[in-house]
Length: 493
Image 1 (cartoon, rainbow, N blue to C red):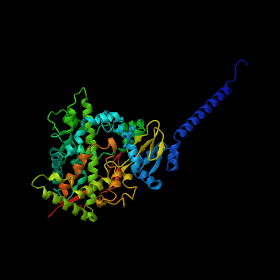
Image 2: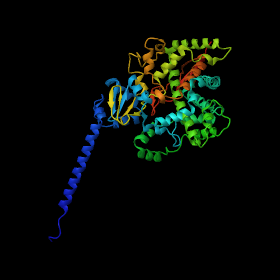
Image 3: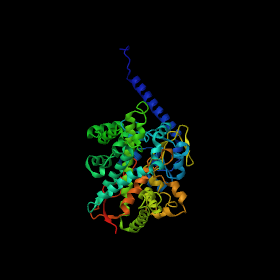
Image 4: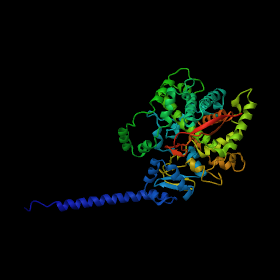
């Protein structure tokens, strides 16, 4: 009948119009996006990084991000685009622009992955004012003046002696394990003395190291950052949602309830704040952050260094360091052995070279360009761009600053020529107001450990040392791939 109208054609027309409108809207949106970030397309880099960030995520998930980015820098130079809205920089100027000038740029949401119990801490605070307020509460505990006082030096040196005792009980020792125990025992002493862990002696405390230093969290954290829903599904299927850190968390809660913490500790300083000023959960979260940051960083760097020193071609370097340590030990035998640990030039050169090659954090430390944009190393970048530098590249890209950049050469740090440039490019502990607050503690731990070992022993690769010492990436750090390093300790005559 005529009163019934065939609406199929009308419906098709409406659908076509809607589809066309949607396509037009998407096209306009894409063009506006490209216009807003046109400056990014002018940065050096592979063509595909102008279209997608999936390649970056792929390398990050697979543990190859550090080497992939460094390879791009070797090909394209000190500035490289790694995703449509992300760039990596490998110059000292850029490093200062990103991390130092004006207090540095704001951290990205990546750092929220390291929150403890849902509480922000010094490391995960994204806002600069929030970070400044948190740091003010306990920065004095990590000052060089505080760290070099006798009580703190004694705590660390005592644990270095226990490390040596454990490693010399058998023909060979897995120093990867013992170094991470040493780092845990040191950082918990800094936080909670006299209730610091005794993981070097084994027992329940030793099990904490198994949880903290052998767990592979990179893939889980990458999924959680980029694909949170997929990460939640993966956690349910694999039961990865179980809190592997529950033991260390319970330990920290217990310590913060103690009323006899040493006056020099982080915990005692946090206890001076009432619960109305700072909730107990926030105090514990801060301590857990410092513990987590202090274990793998120091433990991994020392492990790479001791392995390198134990290789046959470095025997002369080990002997030179031993001679310096023994001379200092003899001079101060009647006073205190710690008094000279921070004034030994060759020891410091060895540590500086270790930090250059195997920094505590080797991967990019991302920051946001503020709204309105800013200039990094001469490049004007739009607001919202993610920018970063990685120590692995800063310490290797410029062979005029670091000749033979992949070779262990402590002697380079003894030369006055080029010293300023070397120091400008060092990024082992980050830079600016948000650089690692535990740097001074880490330096004392390394000096004390090397003194305890190499003033009395020489180390060699054990007969059963067949484990890979290649750098294997986590989210921000790198560790020995096989997480095992067998060395033999031989007493000096």
